[in-house]
Length: 461
Image 1 (cartoon, helix red, strand yellow):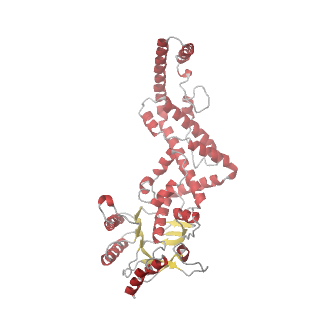
Image 2 (tube, one colour):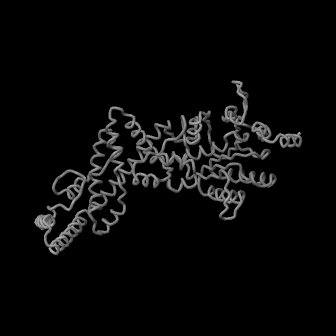
Image 3 (cartoon, rainbow, N blue to C red):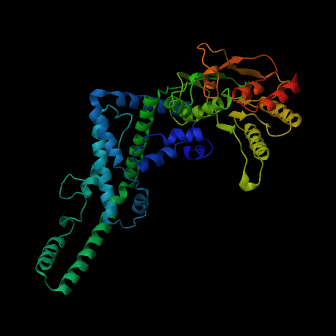
C-alpha cells in the first residue's frame, strides 16, 4: 500500500504528509507513491539517507548549497506526460523541449549543490549533459530554449527576410508565406529532436524521479529537525519512550496547554487499555498508528526513543464510523470494519488498533462481542491494542491502565478549562479485570446538570 492510500483513512498521517515542506508537484507525487514497506533492508537504507539529509540540513557552513538545492527543486515540474510522448515518439513542441532542457539545467545545478552538501552517494543524479547539448546547439549554457538557426540552414536567411518585411511593413502575402515556411521547418526540427532525444527517455525519467525523491527527502529531514523526531530501530516488540501526537502537541503548545508524552511497549498478542474518559486512550491509539506508518514509509517517528516491530499493515477502528450515505449506524459501520480486520489478521501480521469496540450497542451483547474479538485476535499473530470500558471480560491478555486523575500539587482550581492538568496520561500494568469508574466525577467537574448527577449517583450506591 502507498502513502496516498494510507492517508485516506488516517487523519493523523494525512496531517504529517500535508505538513511536509515539499517544493514541487513532482516531489509530492513521488512522496504519495512511497510504499509502506516491511523490508528491514529497505527501511534501514531509507533511514540512513534521512540521517544524511538531516546532517546536511543542519550544516551551517554549507547553508548556501542547501538553499541552492531547494531552489532547484522549487523549479521542478512534473514532466510525466512529456516523457510518455517522447517514449511514443510523439513530436514534442517547443514548450515541452524547453521543459526537458530546464530539467537538465536544474539537475546540473542540483548536482553541484548535492556535491557541496556531501550527499552525492545519497542523492545520485544521472548525467543529462548529452540531452542538454542537443537542446543547446549554440552553447549558451542557459535554460531557455528556442528553435535555433543552427538547427536548420534554411532558418537564418528566412528569418532575416521575415524580420525585414515585418519591420518595413512589406508584402503581407510574402510575410504569410514565410511564416508558414518557418512553421513547417520548426515542426521538422521538433520531429528530428524528438527522435534524437528518444534514446534518453529512461535517463530523463530517472532524473525527474531522483530530483522528486530529493525534494521529499529534504522535506522529511526538515520536519524531523523541527518536530524533534527520532530514528527508530527494528525489534521483536514495539517500544516507544515518550511517544507524542504531533498535531495535538502543536495545538496544546500554541494554546499554552500542558502536553504529556506517553511511553508504551506493544508485544505480540492482545493488550487491553483502560482508563477514565478524557484520559487520552484514543489519542494514544492514533499516535501509535501514525508512528507505525511513518516508520514503515521511511520517516522518523514522534518519540524520544523508538523500537518498531515491522508489520504487514495497520488496521484501525477508531472513532465514530457512522455512514449516513449508506444508511449505516455507528454500530453497523464499526462492526463491519472490525469484521474486515479479523479477516485480514487471519492472513497477515498486523498492528491492530481498536477503540472501544461495541460501545454503541447494548452492554450485554457488546461485552460478548469484545470477548469474541479478543479471543479471535489472540489466535493469530498480531500486535493489538484495544481500549474498552467493559470490565470482567475474563481474558488473560495483558492489560494497561491510564493512571488518570491525580491530586493537584499547585492548588489550581479544578475546572473544565484546567482539567488537562489533573490527568496523568502515563500507563501502568494492571492485573485486575475491572475498569475505572469515573464518569460521574468527570460529569461533575464539567459542571453538568447536578440533578442528573445526583440521581445517577443514587442508582449505583
